[in-house]
Structures are given as C-alpha cells and as structure tokens.
Image (tube, rainbow, N blue to C red; front, side, top):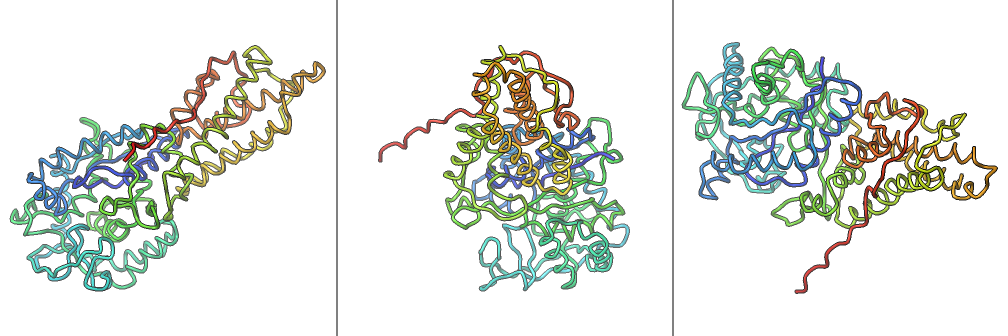
Length: 507
C-alpha cells in the first residue's frame, strides 16, 4: 500500500495566503521524507470551487462563479509551485471527472437508503458553508469562527442519515485513539460525537453553483460532500487512463486546519461508511498561525505575504521558519521580526556558517579533498539513532519534532568544531591525523544533517550535497559513515547570505 497524503482543498473565493502555504508545505515535507524512505508516495492538493462562499464572492465582484474559479485556481496552483511543493496532482472540483465521480458515489449512498428528502430550518453560516447547531453559536447568534450574525434559514434539502453512524463512529474512536491527532483534537471530535449526531443536509435547493444531484436536478450537493470526496475522486483520474485507487486508497494521512475538524473527523468517516469505502488511516489537525494573538485575516490586516517572504529570503527560509517557530499541531505566533531572527541566527549562522566553515577548512588545509581517517571521529556517536528518531517523529506527523531533533545535531556539530578547533590543529604538523579526523567528522556530519533537512530545505541541501559530490537523499544515506568517502569539494557559495532589506520609503 502506498503513502497517500493530502492537504484540504482551498476555497477559490479569495487569493492564497500564509495559512494555505503552511498546510501545503507541511504535506510536502511529509511527502519528501517518505520518498526518502522509498515509499510509493501520492501527494494531493487542489481547489474547492463550488458552494455559497464562492458564489457570493463572485457576485460581489460582478463575475460568475466559474469566472472567479478560473481566475483564482491558477493562483493556488502557482502558490504550490513557488513553495517548492512536489504534489502529484492538483484537483479542481469543477473538473468534469470529479463531478461525475461525486454523482456516482453519492448515488450509491442514496441507493443504499442513507438519504431522505426533508426541510432544513436553522442557523447557517455562508462563510463556513456550514449549518450550525445552537451549541456552536456565540452570543448574538453569531458564528464562532467568523463572528458574523447568522439568520435562520428554511429550505427543502435531501438529508444524509448521519445519526445512523453514531455507534460506528463511537466504535471507531474507541478502537483507534490515534485516528485523530493531536490528542486534543481527538477529544474535540469525540466530544462532538458524544453529544449525539443529527442528520445533516446533503443538498441545497437554493443554490445552482454545485454538483447536480443525479436523482433530482432541482438540487445541488451541499459543498462539503462534494469537497470531501475529492480525496477519493482524484485517484480515479489523476493518472490518465489509470485508476490509482487500489494502489493508494485509503489515505495514509489527511492534514488540515482545526476549523474544518468536524467535517473531516465526523462527517467524512460516516460518508465513507455509507459508501462502503475504507476509512483513512489518520487525520492530523494543525492550529492557526497568529499575529498579535489573533488568527491571520486579511480583513484584520494582520497577514504575512508568503510571496514577499520568498522574494526576499527564498523558499527554503519560509519552509524552515514555519515549522521552527510554531510547533506543528498547535496555534503559534509568527512575525516578520521572528522570521528575520530565525533566518540570521539559525539558517545563516548555525547551518549555513557550519557548512561554509567545514568546506573552507577542507579547501585551506587539505586542498579541497576531504580526508579519510583511520578511525571514526568521536562525533559519530552523537548520530546513533538519529535517522530512526526522525522517522519516528514523521510517523506521528510530528513535523516540528523531526526538524528539532535534526537541528540539535547542527548545534552539536558547531559545538564540536569549537571544542576541536581545527584551525589550531592546522598549526601543528604533529596533529595532522587528528585534523584529518576532525575535518572528515565535520563534513560527514554536515552531509548527514543535510540529508535529514532536505524535506524542509530542499534547495539549500541539494546544492550543498552536490558540492560534496554526495547527492544521495535516501534514509540509508542519512547515517554517519554511510556510502564511503568524499572526492574533491566543488566550489561553494554561502547557503543563506546576509539579506539587505530595502529601507521603507519616506512618508
């Protein structure tokens, strides 16, 4: 069974922002690492193009929903490329193949007796595209996420018998306590189920922008059913003429933000049970990126533009910062000042300077040829179990933990260089063998951490490993002493040069 990892699909009612970048990079880091382990990987991302949020945004702009989708979907595709993401497919829910597959699967759910016609009356948030229970509202009958006042709506809908899946979902959560991670998000989903599940709208009769209901074309499917099914439908047509569902279904891990927990952790498994499809193996729910203790929002004006960061510092720096500054899974604050500090103190000074010093000393003291000592350097012991520890973090979707464990070795190598002081050893001809051992240890250590850092810093690490003449990226290569010695070191420029920011224009 392959390793199948997904982002949620992103609404096209607005342009991409840092939150979209955060999830996409996280999934790319997982995909790159698992490829290093030799796994057969499929990485899916894309855009969610139906439903009321898109229709309303298009109306405000004087466009049709299709025009807005066609305008913004390429921006998300471009974002994925600029982030260095290695997705295998980019799905658009307006793809005709997706529409056909959604109709086919939901017809199966209808034919199995899990759907009935009724009337919805209650609270609805057009921005969430979600029907809210009384318990999900805050004072003033407002949406807890968007803080907008909601109105009660009444509409003929087809309903999905979610209540039928109360016991199966209780059993799922009881038998698989790590089906949703982190534990706090598992508890949140379990609490929602324990409150008792009500049937939910499967269709909308007041909208036309959506997937038509095949047994009653007066209705379109409620956008969340259409959107959730993208994880399955994409496999049916991502490879031209080749259905990939047997190879990759069920998904290994869905990665998503906490605001869409209910849909993925409760409705999604119930829908799959109704369609008689295997469930995903894991959901990982991450928190929000905060500025000034508030969730980033264009309406609040507290956003960091990921493209501006990339233009100034490079893609690797953004990828690194997000998982170094914020522990993946929880909420965490980000800021331009914090970004600059991490770039300078960690990327430039700790990793970049370590690599430059090690290679420069080989060039100066050994004519650019890494020596091969008779015995392993003492630093080799610090690397024992490192690759296994990093793999363990990734198996738990602990992206920040994997980065931190590797970064501790970056710091240990810097400390060891200070302890051994090869610049002093070079002054003593009698210390030539010791100098050989230290230089080899530094370069080999830099090589190993670079292999492990590759999912986070693909551009920098690949350039460094090419300069070392050792471009291997497999986890077998991520062991101290693996693969023999080095040849002559190629010319090498700093990985993370000092950035001169342009002064702000005078008012």
